[in-house]
Image (cartoon, rainbow over all chains, first blue to last red; front, side):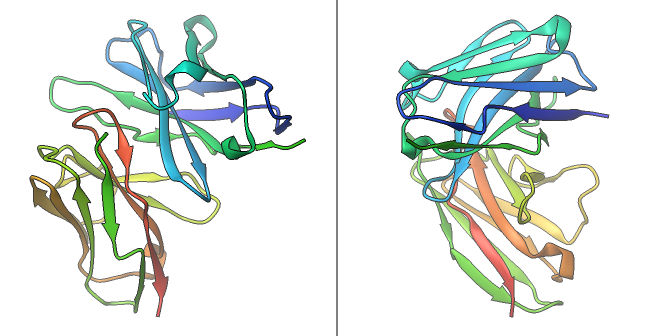
Length: 123
Length: 106
């Protein structure tokens, strides 16, 4: 059974760096074809893809946010991480992690999601 | 960037109705189009991948169609548990979600 769970600070101040953790089970990020991505959802902008990290450590970032994002993983502990620098009130959102898997037949983009963690940026 | 435009943004329907939700891409996305359902307070759930493939466990009343820039999600006979918000998602070039269609009880 695949499960994912996000954790974060809940609230932070403008200009601070957001650090998020995705703890997962039921798969390994060292297995061929696996990927964990981050997506956020705010009332103003809907769903927005942020970044992906693949089993081979390939990383992809949303071009509009690339300069602020860093994605990484700890395969031994089944975790993925996302850092976002210079947070602003506009970054207030629920942040999700989700799993993707490539097979020879299909890529099941974001077939499994965590419950999300709300991050509020406020002074 | 590929922009995804959904219509309508709000849809009122009754149990048993046939419902269609549309998604238009700003350029050809080669059928790399998924549909997700989200209920209040929950994460999105994958319904359909690559335009017309039903995800495991999803009822057959859901179907998808389309090509090029225009795609449709159809629910053949609306059930009470189908109310929520639906998002399209393209994975042809980078990754972009549509703005969502809220399906509510009429």
